[in-house]
Image 1 (cartoon, rainbow, N blue to C red):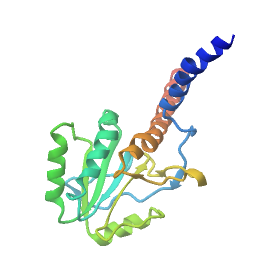
Image 2 (image 1 turned 180 degrees about the horizontal axis):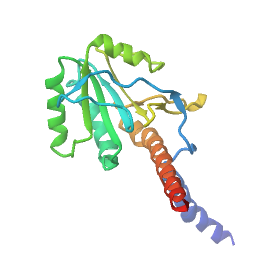
Image 3 (image 1 turned 90 degrees about the vertical axis):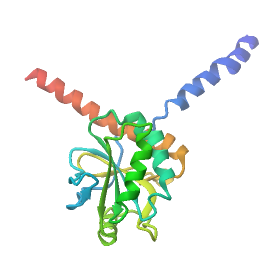
Image 4 (image 1 turned 60 degrees about the vertical axis):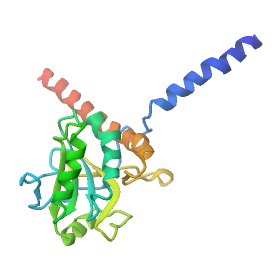
Length: 213
């Protein structure tokens, strides 16, 4: 009997613990709304001259600032940890809002990412620093943009333009720091999986309802 207990502790228990932690999904079945109905972008142009919208897309939103090229490592972390895993999801886009004048830097970043990634869902839009601050402020976030009108954080915006995150006081999360790969691999991926589960569950429900009509 004692031998069986020892074997259980040494072999079975670690496997169970590993499976539990490796599942990497938080306790939410629906990711809370931090800021409802955020504004869509203005008539800001992207690198290809077209307007980018938040409507009907799950958006990973970032603010590149005037030091976009100097901070390109943050975008590489985001690309490696999140984009490469989920860019096959057709209703997903990664959008960075940047000051006018950083277009050439954005091209360099995209070219570098494109060396090992399909980049069709990466977008950069450009506007004035004043408009960037105005847009960021209406998100009602606790942290402010830095002096270069950027931040290392990125944010999850759902298809209805709600900013999503975690509301628990002990685990509050409104954005995810791209400077820290572990945060992207853990908290952000966990929360992003919840968003995908929401839409997949809704799609399945709608398909089932259609079959009954």
